[in-house]
Image 1 (cartoon, rainbow, N blue to C red):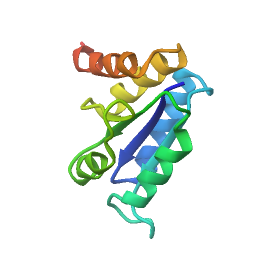
Image 2: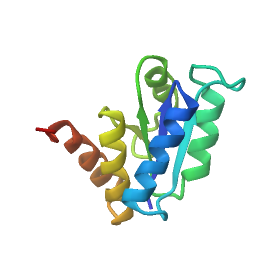
Image 3: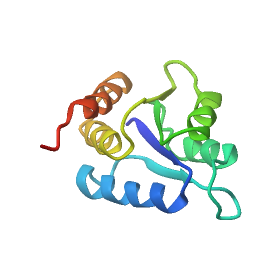
Amino acid sequence: MVGIVLISHSGGLAAEVVALARQIGGAKVPLAAAGGTEDGGLGTSPDRVSAAVEEVDQGDGVVLIPDLGSSVLTARLLESPGRVVIADVPFVEGAVSAVVAAGGGASLDGVLAAADEAWHVRKL
């Protein structure tokens, strides 16, 4: 199954979006939050992101969903074509879409495509 890592500057935000995505997409998806710094502050920790990638990697690939700024730069450090890829998507909507797709057994490309569809979800 494709793993997913949510990378945020805020540990709380990443954890809450993981909780939301799990409730909507199912508990079986390998999903991890990598938010904040080691001391609990705002920021992005390459070590936390790397550990989260290892945690969710089951051999079918890992999708990284960063929020903004340095989380994107950190994600780019860990990119590995065909294995660890970045989804340039809205953080919450993209995460939920990716988790639903992964839970349904989608491939790495399928999870990326589902997350990308979040750009087209209208609220009104």
